[in-house]
Image (cartoon, rainbow, N blue to C red; front, side, top):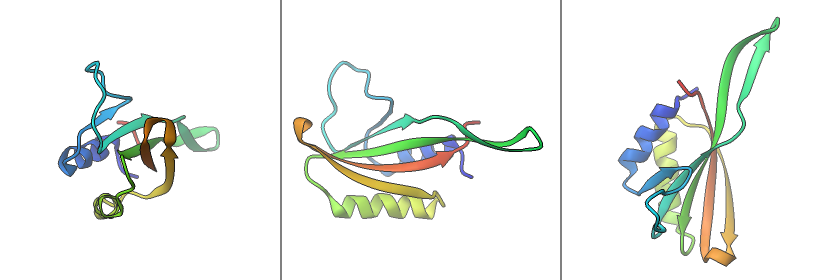
Length: 109
């Protein structure tokens, strides 16, 4: 399983602004941009001993109109870095945005 630091390095090199839990500069970010949010931690155990703990992260790509080429480029970067993900696309009509969210499990070390 990949680490959170591996994911942040991928995001740093991708070329879009990104934040962990929203941008804090007081202004809104112009799309496209990425925001990541931690979910609830999960674990696997045997004989009452935890042997693996991970955190699912939603890595959300925000755009004004769905950008299939940008999605393909981002997915190619995830695949090349060997991240497993599931994907959902949600129009956010009130914000006039499209959210393409990738759920990615990572270890936080």
